[in-house]
Image (cartoon, rainbow, N blue to C red; front, side, top):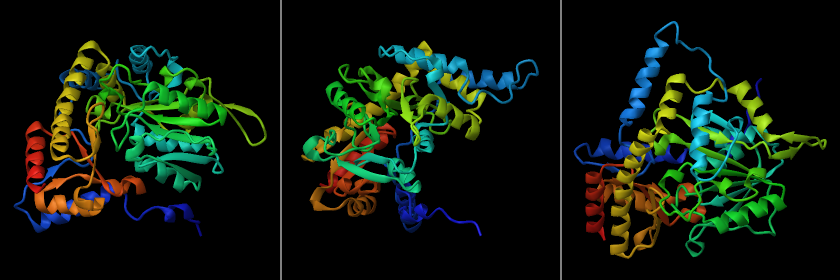
Length: 398
């Protein structure tokens, strides 16, 4: 008889966003005439830009001609896209070799898949509240997880505790769910901590495109020493609306070295390349051509216009919180607004209250960890009209 991985039984019964969808579906079935505004899941609502769509059409035409048809592509991604990504990093003053860049189907996949490279006896340090994938994928592998507390008192930006040892460290900045963003000095301390502990930082920069403050880093590689200890994950899901198109990239510097149980030095870059060649057949050519178009001059202009649209919505939500005197973070360098539940409600109580009384869907903070139990997340990924209407309903409740 095949044996089950018992660590899967340690996962919560329902993934956060599946539970949200289940409750919304039940509400709509019971109240078919009520309008529901969704500000919960971080899915985009604007269509792909014209530059991206044109690139996809051209690539599809190529695939329909014998002389330009392409079969299996490189597992690491086509050079034209890797070079475009490297060019994007140069705008931050970060210089990468293209063989340090790996094209993927999104940051979610790779932040989980990267755990294939590490043994189960590593200790993993994860901030709380946190994107659930970090916790769930390490739980599946049976690793010891220790949490560092993000609270209102530290602006949901926990800092290293040198009395705690960790081998793997997850950092997300701008943060999902809290919208908080580390500055250079704070990231400097995390890099120093990782180097002191011979640890690897898994840095999720999926929301770097929303940073408007020029003093804030877009990449952890803007911090000296980070190439020796940090893997960075990014995605075009929010940058260019690729949530349904699926394309991202992971940077694994060649300077990161790890040690095997028998003392052999191993290259994380080579290990990741080997893993991808075995388990991944690459992102479709058509999608990669579309992704490369994002990094063109016109593509980036269109992407910035999309981001500006969502940030107007973030501002509408943030202003509502200010007017009502509700404590919150985010909404400036992030599309997320993370606020304290009014009336002392816990987050699932507040979810049901908002859905029933206002027909507005958000995400309960408890789904991101125990420190989120009395907090709630709203996203800017909707139309301006819907966002304004949602906040009008919100004001009527408070």
